[in-house]
Image (cartoon, rainbow, N blue to C red):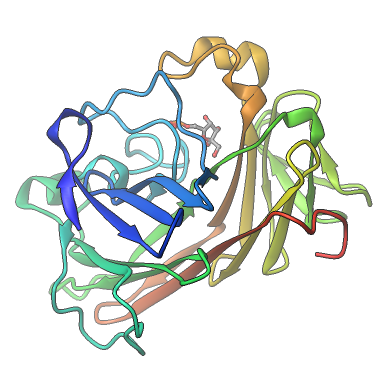
Length: 295
Ligand code: TA6
């Protein structure tokens, strides 16, 4: 179902029965809401402006072809600031879901875009809302350069999860891993053996993580599970109090009710020769009863 969102920007709404839905803005192919049992699972800042070319603060921004300021482009690249199109006839997806709750989106560069990043590409994104409320993403990026040139890129699903209270949240699946600390010149460190808990600003790129990460919210007795493929890294970000105050489109206290855990390919850029295609996947699930260890 296509309709108008904030400021008249086109959005797609997918539903699966009662209380299960997802909203996707064509601006950025940006998921702004994911509900299960009527419960919102993504964080969206009350201060966000839906004013292109500014990015939307919250939900699931897509970082492509750059992550953060690790290159000459605008922060996190340009995919989150572009108007995407619905792709009615996507080629060669392995299987069409048997239900209607999915959408295929596509981004290709305009002539103007080619001046900023001189590469021709087709970026296809399929978003599926499963019957049980699972939210599944398949991202396919193809090099369509005709000049014989390869290109390289970094990528992240910059997911902002909604949490009851950051002090009651634990992340499992990242213990003992190596990471780059964005708060310390991206120097290399190794995480200790315990699950991750939060009591100050964090901005880390965990390298080569397991495919499954769990965000356990003791306050709300829910576990969010993130599964990924083709996206070796995982970013964990919470701006905490001081940084939150410096972000104009983020409420001063909102750091308490959000946590970004991002399926990403950052440390090793993806390189594609002309004609080659890369695929990355992320599945998000929620479990309201089982919130103890074991993920
Ligand atoms: O993913 C973490 C990060 O790169 C942080 O360094 C932080 O600045 C955040 O993304 C948000 O970036 P943004 O450009 O959306 O303000």
